[in-house]
Image 1 (spheres, rainbow over the protein chains, first blue to last red):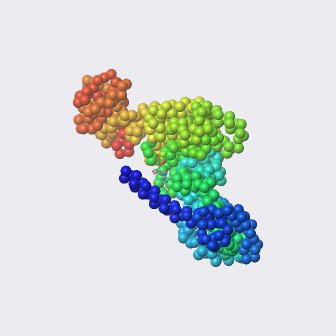
Image 2: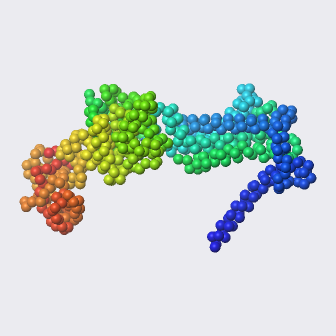
Image 3: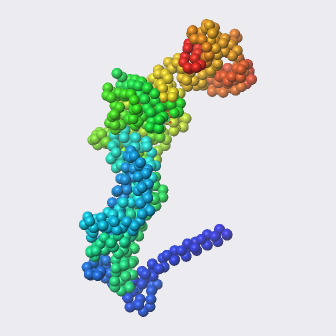
Length: 273
Length: 350
Ligand SMILES: Nc1ncnc2c1ncn2[C@@H]1O[C@H](COP(=O)(O)OP(=O)(O)O)[C@@H](O)[C@H]1O
Ligand SMILES: [Mg+2]
C-alpha cells in the first residue's frame, strides 16, 4: 500500500514536470492553427483551429527578410546543409584526431589531448571576432563553407572517441597487424565498425549543435540567402500565427532525427562497447 | 642455419626492464618448440619479438633464411594465437578466418575454399555465421586456431592459449593442438607456464628463468637430466625434494644420512635433489619419513611427510600400497637417481 502511494506520488511529480514542459509547446501549436484575428481577439488557444494548411504553407513559401528574398523553405535548406556539414566534418575530424592521439607514437600525446580538451572551456563567443576576421580574409563570408568549418572541430567528440579507442584491447591491433592490416586498414576495418553506434550518436549530437547555431551564422552571413532557421526565428516578421507556425516547424528536424536514431544515441553515449 | 634462428637476442623495455638476456635458440622446420617458465620470466617477450610485436634491442632473428629484425609484423608471415584469443568481435567466424587472406589479395573462391577447409579441420563449420560473442570458450579457441591455420603461415606462435579454459577442456585442446600441429606440420612455438602442458606438447622445450634459457632439450632429457636447481624444481610434478648437504672426499652428508662415492669432485655446500617417484621402501634405508598426509590419485599415492629435521618431503608410490597417516617409512633412492647442485650457483655437479 505504501509502495503504491509513493509510486503514485513520484508519477504525479513526473506528470507535472511533463505538463510544464509540454503545455507551452502545445499552446503554440494550437494557436498556430487559428487565424491571426482570432488570436489577437481571444489570446492563446488550447484547442486546434482549422487554418493549419493555410498558415504553414504561407510561412514556408513567403518571401521574408528585409529584402524579401528568402523563404522559410530556403532557411530549412540552409540549416540542413549547415547542420549536416558540421555533423559530418566534426565526426570525421574527431575520429581521425582520436586515432592519431591513441595509436600513433606522438610525443606528449596526453598533453596535446588536454590542450584540445581545454578548448571546451573556450566558447565560440569568446573567439568569434578573430574567427570572423580569418573568414573575412579568406573571403568565406556568405558561404556554406564559412558557416560550417569554423565550428567543426569538436573536443567533446574527440574525447568520446579517444576514450573508446583506449578500451579497445591491444591484442586486437596486434592480431590485425599479423593478419596483414596496415594502420589505415585497422582504422577502417576495426575502429570504425566497432565505434559505429558512437559515430551515429556523435552525428546526431553535432547535427543538433550545428542546427542550433545562432551567433556565428548571424555574423558570417550578410546575404539573406544564407539565413538559417534559428536566425529566421529572430528575423521573421509577419503576423503572430505565422511566427508560431515557424517556431513549430523549426523544432521538427532535431526532434525527427532523435526519434529516428535514438536507439543508437542511447547506446552510443551510455553503454557503447 | 635452421628455420628460425635467434642470435644473442636481448630485450630491454623503455622503462629499463631487461626482459630477455642474450638468448640464442634454433628451431627446426616442423618442430614444436615450447617456452616454459614462471610468470614474468620473459617468455611472451621472446615470442612477441619473433612475431614483430616488440622491437629487438640487440641481436638477430632469422626466419626461413631471412633476417627479420626490421620486417613489419604484417609482412613476416607468422600467425599468433593469443591468451584471450583476440577474435574480431564485429566480424562473424567466417570473416575472422578470411580477414588475413583478404589482406593478402587472395581471390574470393580460394578464400572460401581455404576457410571451409580450416573450419572442417577444426569442426567449426556450423558456426561460421556466428559472432565470437555467441561462442563458448572452447569454440573461440578453435576459431583462434583456425585464423592461424587458414593462412598457412611460416610459423605458429601460441601465447598461453589454453589458460582461459577449464581443466578438462584444456587437456582436450592440448591433445588437439598437438594432433593438429603434427597433421599440418607447421613450425610452432608454444608459450606456457604449465610444465605438464610443456612436457606433453613439446618436441623440444626451453626452460626460461629471469630472461635466460636455463636449459634446452627434449622433455625427457630435461626431466632425466636437469642442469640446474631451477630446472630440476620447475619440471616434474610433484616437485623434486631438495635437501641441504655437504660434500667432502666424494661423500655427501645430509641431515641424517650419507651417500658415499658420489661421481663428482665437487666439495662444499650442496643441494641434494630427489624426485618423489625415484624412492622406494626398503630395509636398509637411507631416509626415514614420518607420514602426515596421503593423497590417493588411484594409480599413485602421493605421500607427504617430514624427515627427522622437520623438513617437508614427498614420496610417490604405487596406488595399491596402503599407507597410514602417522606411519614411519624407510625409503631408499632407486638406482642412485639423485641430483646434486652447487648451493651457491645452482649448477648441477654430479
Ligand atoms: N611493455 C612492457 N614494458 C615494460 N616492462 C614489460 C613490458 N612487458 C613486459 N614487461 C616486463 O618484462 C618481464 C617479462 O614479461 P613477459 O615476457 O610478459 O613474461 P611472461 O610472459 O614470461 O610472463 C616482466 O618483468 C614484465 O614485467
Ligand atoms: Mg606472458
